[in-house]
Image (cartoon, rainbow, N blue to C red; front, side, top):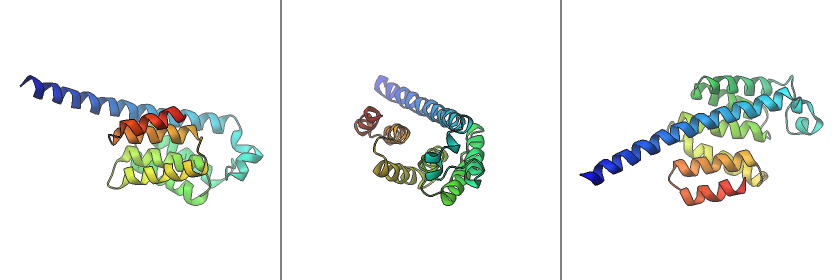
Length: 155
């Protein structure tokens, strides 16, 4: 009887921890994008090479996605980030944001799609801290704790 109660308590704690992680990751994404857009980094020549232009519809789609993530509207955020990826397929940030939104939405196939997007980004940029960190979050969520540690150590 004690063992069953302990297991239930452990499961509840794990679920609550994952909810906190999801909220923290969402806020982290919002802060990073706010710094990127607010600092003018989106207007640099290197940023333009990656598909970032302040007047670009892709930036508007990303901003809309960030706003929706702040409101915990993950489905609509995933659509906005998906639009950004269609407009600028080379944009690493848009793909990472889409992966985060898909993970948070958690509909059928979303976790697999988040993994696919993150793997794609990491194949292009193996040292991308955001992709490594979030890949670790997804691994932890799916019970692959040892693999998660590897990704966390990489960022």
